[in-house]
Image (cartoon, rainbow, N blue to C red; front, side):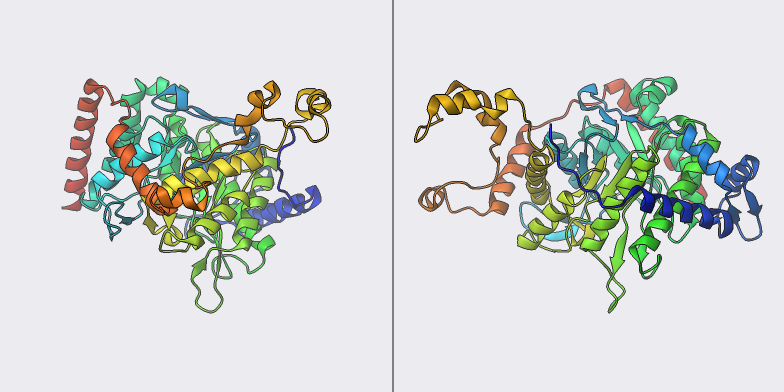
Length: 478
């Protein structure tokens, strides 16, 4: 099978970036706002300045962490049919955005704050779509009290999809409750370790900083065997150098530092190398979608695979605020220019991930289908070369009725949404635009698709966990 490959860094260039990263970690160091994490690093052999919350990490600790880290990771799901293996051979696609505050109402087109019910509907759509392999907790439940929002959103998501769920925790205690919920669904602590149905995105703060809540949550997940994604978000010219190579050094440092903390907290902890790097508009300082950001994605994939680690990147979605041509072409470019990653996220997002659209989620699912066709390349063997069939049909003949054609024509693919009719037929069918077709598809999915529910006894257990968490968090607030 001849597959599409996108790479541009030579091995020497990758090693230059790696060595520069090691130099920064050993000499400049990282700021870690957690005594727990600093203690782990000190016991491992890092030099710690507790007064400055600074850790300098020698090369040998990075090398040891890389040896300990699993090279393949299984993302399991409530339904094993949706299990995904991150083995650096296939690309998987997921929804975009964590806790996006706004939604485009698919019925009215209104731009409004999202609710817990919106999140439930979103997950049912994502559960139905075949090219969405697992999900982020995309929408914020704005109608849920802030102290319970993370746990409620996790439960809503797990209740409305049978696929793997990737989310984040803001503190060690929140992570512990998330793990409890996952244990209840998985059927036990060891069962969860064997089949992690959730993973965690715990982001460093560029440049070279780990916040207390996020890194302590990452440590809890590592100890429970939950995969951790250290998705950093450097902004070139602001929180990373103006050069792409310099930004790659920041990305590498932050990912390697997170890896070291995870592996010395719990040897063999599953870790995913990740970035959502962006570039800044020099005139405004705002983060913008750009081809340079996609280059950072591609380079990060190469670097992650050099380390033997799975890699997750963002397709950066679109800066468009509407379901228009910009939303389509930016999404298509982002997906195609990130090929090679184990995970690409960003489906369904608009306005740089601040705004979500159910119709766009359906359209992006079709864009992914086209991306897969391109990434799959073509197969060359005696059957596909078709010399015997060409000889049989001969000059001026027709291949339409041949058995060879009947065996292979479905490989060419048929779009679910895109229009291929003549102009006259399109008119007779109502002259519908792609967003109108997508709206009808959303309506159909929500009317007919219902994921298998969580068992009633488990729902009762989760309800008790949420009650305990609410009592604890409300007491802390008062």
